[in-house]
Image (cartoon, one colour):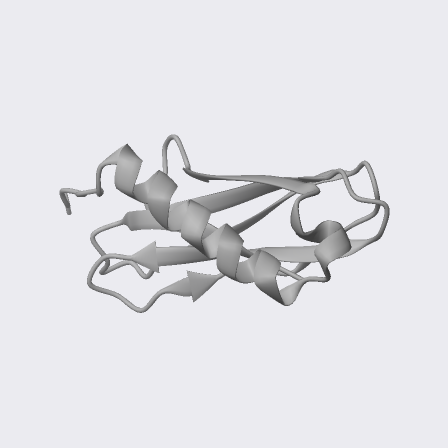
Length: 110
């Protein structure tokens, strides 16, 4: 079965990711709010998989997970990933088989 996938423009995905970071960072203490560098992306081959990649530049341990917006299917969240100071990690989630693919990728930080 061949399905066509549609994605929002990269600018919209970046905007949604930035909003998600702002909302996620608001829940974290101020000392970590500006010290975690994250990016969201769609997998290069599997357009149903969204990936959040983060580097912890703070002085404390953080947890984060990917928040993936799926077209015509429920949104999904990735597994929680714990990062010590200086560490890098990824969290990913896959949209249901009947979705139209990843619309955007954000993240939640604790």
